[in-house]
Structure formats: C-alpha cells, structure tokens
Amino acid sequence: MSNAQNTVQIIEKGGVVPVVRLPDLAGAAELAQALLDGGVTAVELTMTSPGALEALSLLRERVPAFAQGTAALGMGSVLNRNMAAAAIARGAQFVVAPTLDLPTVAYCAGLKVPVMPGAFTPSEVQNAWQAGAAVVKVFPATKLGPGYFTDILAPLPHLKLMPTGGVGLDNAGEFVRAGAVAVGVGSALVRKDWIADGSWQAVTEQARRFVSAVREARAEK
Image (cartoon, rainbow, N blue to C red; front, side):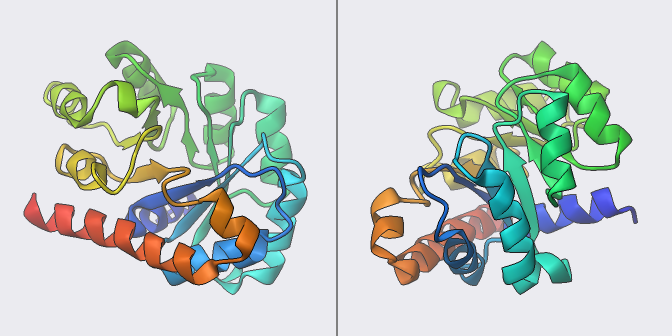
C-alpha cells in the first residue's frame, strides 16, 4: 500500500475532517489533540488562517499521532500549485481546495500526496477524479444536500466524495448514507468561542458526536 493510499484510509477511518479556519492558531496543538481525542483521524488547517504554514510544522512536532502515522494532517484553501508546494514542504500529508485547479491536482498526484479539490457539478467532479483526485470535495454541499450524492454516485459509483459547507450533526449521517466517504466540518465542530475559551473538552465531545454519527450511518448502509 502506498503512503497516499494509507493517508486516505486514515482520513476515512474517522470519517470527519475538521476545517480549522481561525484568526489565531496559537492554540492549534491543543485544538488538534482535542479533536483527535474525540475520534477524529484527520485535521485540515487552512491557508486563510494566519501562521497556517508554521502551524503545520508545529503540529507535526507536538501532536504524536501525526508523527506516528495514526492521524493525518492536511492543508486546505489551497488555490494553486505554489500554495500546495509550500504546504507539502511544511509537512501537509493531504491537500484540500475549494475549487478545481487541474495543475494543482496533477502536481499533488505526481508527488503521491492525496489531493481533494473542490467541485460542484457532475462534470467538475468527474474531471477532478480523472486528474488524480484522491477524494473530491463537493462544495458548497449545503446548496445540494445528501440527495445530490445519491444522484451523482448512481452513474459514477467509482467516485469518492466528501461534502463540505453546511455539514452539521443534523445531516452528517445523511451524507454518509448517501455515499460520502467522509464529511468536512467547519464551525459546527471547530467553534470559535470554544477555542477562545480553551474549552477543549467541549471540542472533544463534539468531535465524538460527529464520529459517532458517521459510524452509525455506515452501519445502516
């Protein structure tokens, strides 16, 4: 099994990818550990957060699970090849984008780094997959709903899809039952007030709820 395949399996294991988009990543290590304690197996920082590249290196050093290979650390909001290169150089194990930039997909795939480009239409999703996407991020998923996943996977069952944008505890399981391999979750899990207060136990408990919702949905399929 390749490193890329192993990373994708790690991400799929927990089935929840927290999207960490905060104005200050000073508590990034504590936040990441709190998420992992809740059963999450992947964490996505974002290029839109100040100090995101530095935080990648910090988390690889301070959070044992990332160094040991039991959890995956990635970078999101990657818009082009240069941003992807910078993230990978700092230790990103997977790359996520809100849009489909084919050169970026090809670059990451060439380095055997799993890439999850954003796509919205069936054609975009298929083009992303053919270009080398490990998983296609359907964004913004809130505008489409779980039924869209059922519809698109009927003629395209080979795809691996992950909804992001508007995913909460009320619909995470529905997306998984509709065929999603994982769900990307932002403010419904990484709440700014909890981060500001250092309420790490609250983060862990919420992560546990999301992971349980995914696990239960998989059992029902």
